[in-house]
Amino acid sequence: MRIGELAKRAGTTTRALRFYESEGLLEAGRTSNGYREYDEHHLRLVREIQSLQAVGLSLEDTRPFVACLRAGHESGDSCPDSREVYRRKLAEVDACLDRLHTVREFLLARLAFQDPCLVPEPKEFQCSS
Amino acid sequence: MRIGELAKRAGTTTRALRFYESEGLLEAGRTSNGYREYDEHHLRLVREIQSLQAVGLSLEDTRPFVACLRAGHESGDSCPDSREVYRRKLAEVDACLDRLHTVREFLLARLAFQDPCLVPEPKEFQCSS
DNA sequence: CTAAACCTTGACGCTCACGTCAACGCAAGC
DNA sequence: GCTTGCGTTGACGTGAGCGTCAAGGTTTAG
Image (cartoon, rainbow over all chains, first blue to last red; front, side):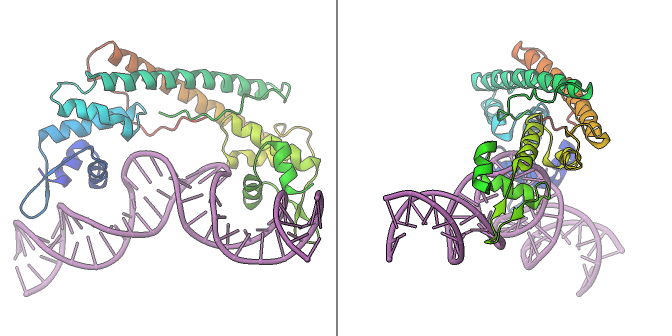
């Protein structure tokens, strides 16, 4: 199949697929006229990337999973590097949950009209999913 | 005081202060040579902005608080618009907490080697603090 | 007097995962 | 033959909140 069909079947865009290729995540074959050629295995890879992005992993973080699938494993998260990414992300999520609980308490206190001087630590913090 | 001193006392940078001014959040007076001139009231405004950013509010969201302080209120969150921002942010935080709990369960399940097909909704979602 | 340390505006850089446009080639239906 | 709809590469735009020069003017310490 060509890039348009893969995009449609995966529910994404051709631009995204070309971007994955430029990042080395999705190598495609080429037909004689230069068109990219994909198969079901590529669709599987794209689906893996999408589901990982859905839980808040960056594209960079999906590399081990893609590599794991390409190495022949039936699931992308059966390799050590992938599981390490899971563990790291879990720690991030836990930290984020802590942080958000603190923020929530702060907002509730302010809405309840309490003292305006208790401010959460202004640490750099990025909470994303 | 001039911009450098204000930055130092607020624990920020001159660039940030100039940026706030460009966004209309921090209007400064000017001395005869064109230097910006600030007082304790400005410092108070900057501190307010910082503490709000620390709980994950965007600069845009800090506008009502700054306006409230400039309107003469002793605290920036005593005005209706400010409290509305608090309420909206609280709702965002709650949604984020829900989302992160789901993600956390997903990660735990994957690490426990379970079925690889349950994937959280790939909704657009931005969780930040 | 001079050098350091401050101030000014303006403009580009950064992150991330693409969106969007430009300008072109290729293929198929009428 | 012509239009329509695929495909190609390349390059710039997006958002948030500044960081980081660049190229000057001003003030202060020695």
